[in-house]
Image (cartoon, rainbow, N blue to C red):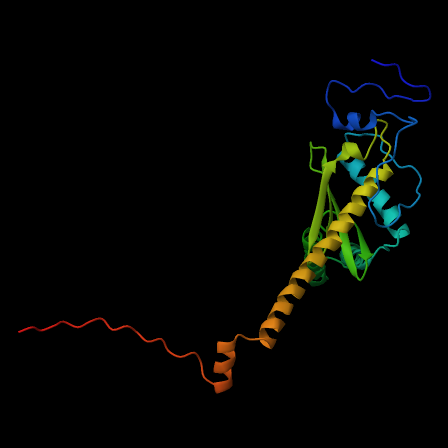
Length: 262
C-alpha cells in the first residue's frame, strides 16, 4: 500500500459488518485532489447550520432530521410552505377539544345526557375525519410547499428494519420518487450530509417537472395530428364529404348457382 500523501486525513477502514451507515461516513476528508460531486441544475442549495442525529439506527430520529432540513431549506430556496392542510387539521383538532371539554366540565349528568351524547358522537366523527385526511391526503408527508403554481407534498418513507429511504414529490395528478440508502445522507458521526440530500432533491424536482412536460408534449403532438388530418383530408374522404354521403357499399361477390344439365 502506498503511504498517504501529506495533508490528507483518512477515515478508518470499512467495518467487516458491511453496515451502509458506517460505510457512508468512512471516506477521505480534505484530500488535495478531492473534487465535489457535480450538482444538477436547479435551485441553489441554501446555507444552513449543521444538523445531525444521536442514533443512526433510530427510524424516528432519521426521519425527524431529514424533515427539519427540508422544512428549513425549501422555503429559503424559493419554495414557501403552504399551510392549508395544516390549518384544516388544527381547526378539526380544536373542535374535538372543545367538544371534549364541554362534555367533561360544562355538562352535568344526567341532566344534560343528550348534550353529552351529542358531544361524544361529534368527537368521534371529527376524529374519524382527521384520520381519513391523514390516511388519504397527508400520508407520510413532512412538508407541503408551493412549487411554481401548484402545491406539492414532500413524503419521506423509511420502512422498519431497512436503510432504504424513499423521498417523493406528490400531487393529485402525478408522483415521482427517489429511493436511496440513508447511509448516503448521514456520516458515521450522525451528521447530515446536506450536499447529498440537496443534490437528490434537485434531481427529483427535475424528474417531477419532466413528467408534466412529457405529458404536455404528447397532448400537443396528438392535437397537431388531429388538426392536420382535419385540414388535409384524404381525397376519397373529401369527395364523399362534399357529396354529403358516406362510402359506397361494397359489392358482394355472388357464388355460382347450381348448373342443370340435360
